[in-house]
Amino acid sequence: MRRELIVLVASCLLFIPVRAAVPDIELVIRDHLFFPAVIEVPADVKVRLVIDNQDPTPEEFESYELNREKVIPGNSKTILFIGPLKPGEYPFFGDFYPKTAQGRVVVK
Amino acid sequence: MFLSAVILILQELLEAALLISMLLVLMSVLRQRWPGFFNVALSWVLGAIAVGLAGAWCYALLTPLVSTWFDYVGYEVINGALQFVTIACLVVFCYALNPGLAPARWQARAGVAAVSMIVAVALGIVREGSEVILYVQGIVGQPENISPVMLGALMAAGIGTSSGLVLFHSLGLLPQQWTFRVAILLLGLFAGNMAAQAVQQLTQADWLPFTAQLWDSSGFIAESGISGKLLYALVGYEANPSLLQLVAYLAALILVALSPLFRSAWVPASKAEGA
Image (cartoon, rainbow over all chains, first blue to last red):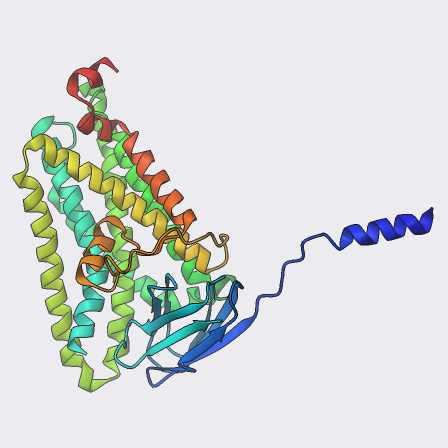
């Protein structure tokens, strides 16, 4: 009886939703460019974008397709969440230096 | 650099410029319609702009610190909070001003409305202005970019101010009842815009859950185009909004639409008096 109870409790525990670990994707801003300029992300998962602005100037990460917008002060790190996304390409750019700061998220 | 500066500064400036014109239109309509109901001197609005600019400067200085709060999503959380306070101010404004009340009660309520209006204008400038200040501060370290950016800033200021004036005067061309109706409707849509933006910020910070994207109208009106940017500043146009953004947008709009001020504009006078 006791063993059955343990099995029952253990099998119930399996169904408790565990908050899935959100994968980190790192992005560096240097000389008003994004490194890497193309980020690959799996479809239908939320991703934590860790952006490290190594320039002394602030930048604004912006993407109409991803519906994201965030100012990142110079020489600082920031975090923003994207997704879950459908497969496809989602361009992003630096609103303060849009001529050079261009990149895209490729969702597969 | 010049063109990027014009576009960047203009899109930050437009929102505040359009909010100020809507409020100025409302002030002038209310003054004509019910003398003594809501008389706020223009100097109060100018004061709000000055306070907003000072606040924007402080917020820009604090941005590096604020950004590190709440595990690096402090910027979204504070921006979202500022947007919710702006909505609250606009809602208080529309509920405080009730032309159906006895004129003896107008003055006390006009004071509350004036303070809400001023806080809304100042906060709008704090949020948008701080971005422009951060951008311009970054440029100062690049001598070759200073003059194109300064020229761009001047041009953006010119276009932004003219857009506000165009909105103000074109609303004034309508018959008075319609000036009132359109101005208060725009104020409601502006509140909706703030709500949708706040939801976007908090979703990006993972403080609000992800909700499905409802549609994609970027092929029809792209957010990156001129009409997209103008519509974004005026009514919060979003080419690919999420469900939660739409819900928040409608909730704020409905809250304004149920207010006595909105009803006094849109419900025929005979019915409004009977209510």
